[in-house]
Length: 107
Image (cartoon, rainbow, N blue to C red):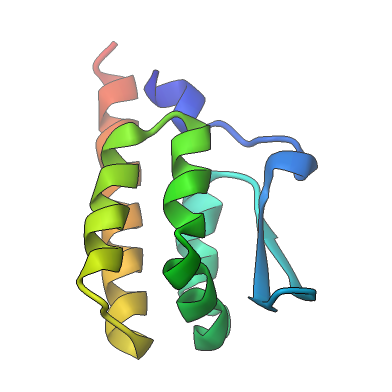
C-alpha cells in the first residue's frame, strides 16, 4: 500500500495548484513527495485557497492515504492560515512520506 501512495500519478491526476478558480499557477505535483516539496515554495494564497476548499485531503485520499487525509481535515478545521498553515502542511506531508518510505524498506 505504501508503494502505491508514494508512486507518481499520471499528469491528469497530479495536484495542480491554483490561486483561485480559473487561475492556475502552472505548478503541479505528481507524487506525495513532490507535493511536500512544492508546498514549501508555492504562493501562500494558493495554499490558503486549496486548504479552504478541502482540495489537499481529497487529492491525498485519491492517492490512497486515508490516514494523511484525515490529518489534513483536522488541520483545515483549525483554521490555520498563512505561513503557519504552510509549515504544518509541509511537516505533516514530509513526516508521512518518511513513514511510508520506512514501511517499504521493512518488506
